[in-house]
Figure: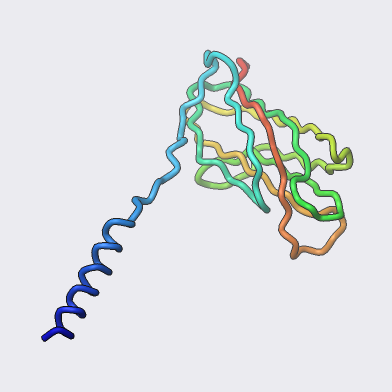
Amino acid sequence: MNKIKKIITSVMLVIAMCVLTAQPALAATNNEIWYIDHYGNYKASYTFTDTNLTPYKIMGNTANLVVFGKFKKADTGRSNIKLTVQIRDYPSGRVLDQMVVDNTNYPNTNMFFLATTVTAGQKIQLFFDASSINNPPGFYRKAWVDYDSYLAPL
């Protein structure tokens, strides 16, 4: 009887631990609507490994979407990195504009600039890819990016 009590108590403790330590999943809900009359720019700054694809943004106006910023290598790899930045249509993934910039100015930053025409209601995503310059793939690279985006009238 004592052994059964221990088993039941153990099972109850395991169940209690599972229930009490469960964390709800958080979804990225940054599917903002961007407008020409936004006060200031839409800004972001972060470090990522390998690639980063933003949640889609809904264009509130037909306008020119401008994305500009700076980046630098954020890992200990000896070789420099290059950053590919794309403005993509969502959900098709079609590339609307792209720029590839080598980080040859390390430890200082290098700049990037993209612009494309978007229509009201169109969904877009920003894609970033950090990769080695002239090296075979395999080593995941880190980059720090700091960028601004805004809609400019046509």
